[in-house]
Length: 105
Image (tube, rainbow, N blue to C red; front, side):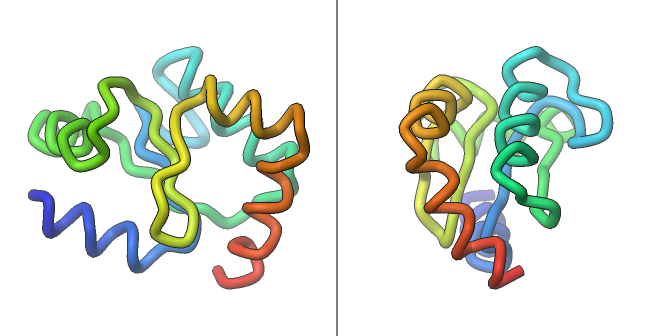
């Protein structure tokens, strides 16, 4: 499962592991993460609905050594969850980070 996650992260400049989908988030934190990405002008990003696969839901937590969902990866690097994304958005860091990655997708 870790190999599958690694492949997904490498194949997608911006990928969000979340509960639900970008169109239908299944928790407030996942919804907030999607809203932050969209507020940064990101239109094309991959989402993985961890509710559809209990194995990936557990494996992503182990992979990142981060206990909660959602989890954002940009250019292969683990960024954090919605709390970290919120802080980065407030400081302008998130916009800078996703700007370049968004041009790769």
